[in-house]
Image (cartoon, one colour):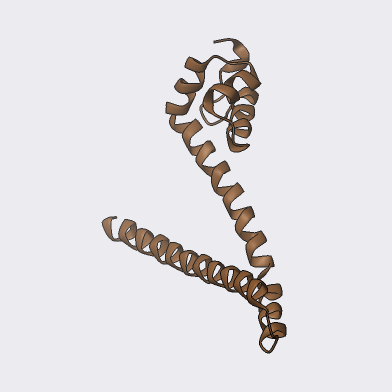
Length: 131
C-alpha cells in the first residue's frame, strides 16, 4: 500500500477507492474495475471488506438506483397521457402495455418509499425507547 492508497482520515476514501467504486457502479467486474484503476485484485477484495468502503459503495449504488427511479417517475405523466389518448383507439396494445408497465412500476416505487419512511420512523422510535 502506498501513501496514495491509504485514507488521510478514517472517514475518507482515497481517490483510487472512489475511482474503483465508480468502475464497479459502471458495471465492471471486480477484476476489470481493479485493473481500470491500477490496483491489484487482492487490494480490491480487501477494500470491499472495509466498512467505510462498503458504506460508500452502498451509497453510490443507491444513488444510481434512485436516479434511475427518478427517470421512471418522470415518465408517469406521459404514461397517463398515452393511456388517455389510446382508450378509444382501435389497436393501441403496445402503447397501452408500455403505459401500464410504467404506471405499475411508478406505483411500486411509491409504495416502497412509503414503507422505507415508515421503517425509518419505527427504527427511530425504537432507538428513542431504548434510551
